[in-house]
Image (cartoon, rainbow, N blue to C red; front, side, top):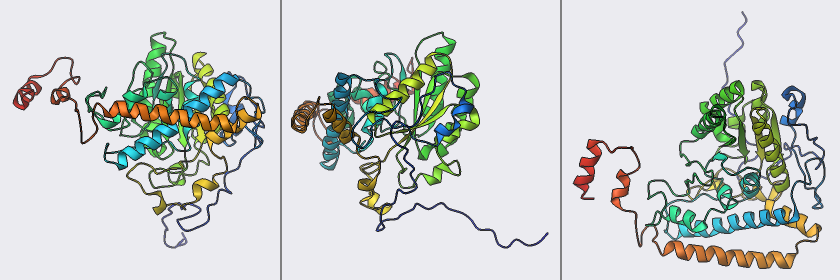
Length: 410
């Protein structure tokens, strides 16, 4: 056999590095309203192309168009706008608090607010989300007290998790928010297992799995797809493609699949891509996927095409791996501005009312922050009891923990 020469190792590279001109020419954006809305019992093989397109409702003029439009009332849209504005203001205050040393760590949702806020309104009470660390909008849109979120971030005496979890890793069974795990991708397979258990129990509740683009490279993601497809688990498999993992671009995890949604095709799972910065589109697709799950039609894989406008976390400097102006060049725009423009187009909102709402929301968030800080912050004020670290691990505390608790004098 002829010598083919030396082998070469291939490492995918992003289109642009720091100092270059942002380039999203590889992101094909179909016209708003152009992607059809199939019946929920559609044969996945007949909608394969939807794994490579992008479902959009809002056009450049702020109009809601196409078959995915018309599911939300003006009141529901105004509520959704407020939820996203609340999350963004909450983010800004908590990021500032981290810089002031009041907490050790924080992760923003900047540019991704529509994904979690709109999705939550498509679920029912009792459904369970298995989120990553960038879905706090699920809690805000469900009415979870903001003060409790801040208490958890500060790990103070009123922290509902008693200081036993990292900041921003919330947990609330009542609000369908499974405890966040710092070990990424583990919750994907857990969500499928929870959904399978719900079906085995003849329950009516469905599950939603969440993962970022980078973590789809982990084995739990693929295991989840095997179990979900085999047992037709009533679960929505969400992939938030915000273009960047902590410092690697999406091409590292995506491989040769073309899109993350396309990963579902090999498992016979209906796979859709949606404009993650379009509140109406996100809600409509989530409703469609939830209806499939409730009708015993099995899982749906949804890729939300969005952009992480901020840093990965308060410990990250994105200017080290992407152009500083890249977020401004993102072609799908800002989710809050887009919904605001839509409501102004419908004559149910205005620039003046938006400015007023911003001030009101800021006042609400600051008041919540003051209340939370009255219970303590990272370096000042009340702390959870040392005794709490021994509680809630076992149904019956084993002897070695009882001894350790006694030695600690608590």
